[in-house]
Image 1 (cartoon, one colour):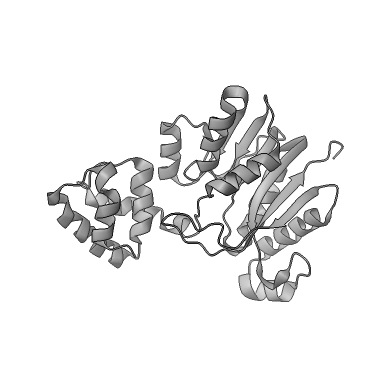
Image 2 (image 1 turned 30 degrees about the horizontal axis):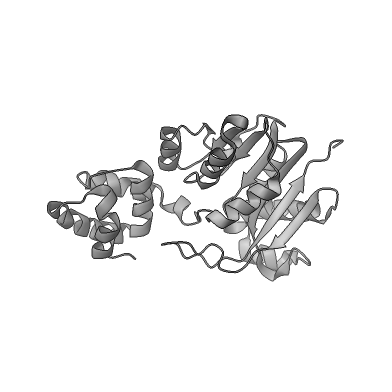
Length: 265
């Protein structure tokens, strides 16, 4: 947990914290400790909202608690990986692109800076604090929950870093695959699951670990897509530690997955 002094140093320049607010920050740490909310989660909420004052401590704590469950699995995509997935996607002018778990908008900002208005980019983000931040930066946030968003096969490219926990990435990838146009391409960062189960999976062990039938079912469906050479064109193990960026240290084993929607599906 980041202590009060470190947090003051981190935030001093952008948020202009004054001496009087130091006591409020220290009190906030005590409140967060009781509520089981980490200071890092609080920092994410503050940055996303561009708050410049710690005056309303109760509101800040409420925001942090509200986002606690989502933040447990939230890991932003590092810049070098964003460049890689953008290159693999082979984005062209006139295409419609979806980022279904937009988070802080790192992928979208990269696409906007490199492709400008030549492409249309849609974003979906379930965290209302992050969604508000996206909208304030003129990012086209069209929905809250990607699993409830069903516009049909309208996207040329989908770039995604879905939630990893409890095999839920499988459900997100399968759902988004159905939103691709025929001939479209999905590029996703997914975790290396237990038991080496992309190569040889053991259903009994999966059930024992997760106990979620629908998640296991979707995971097995995803494996079938990965095994299909007409659909899966790229399945790369990413270097360990690739998600270690700045204040974030996420030691996650991941893979880069590319799924193509056949023209005659």
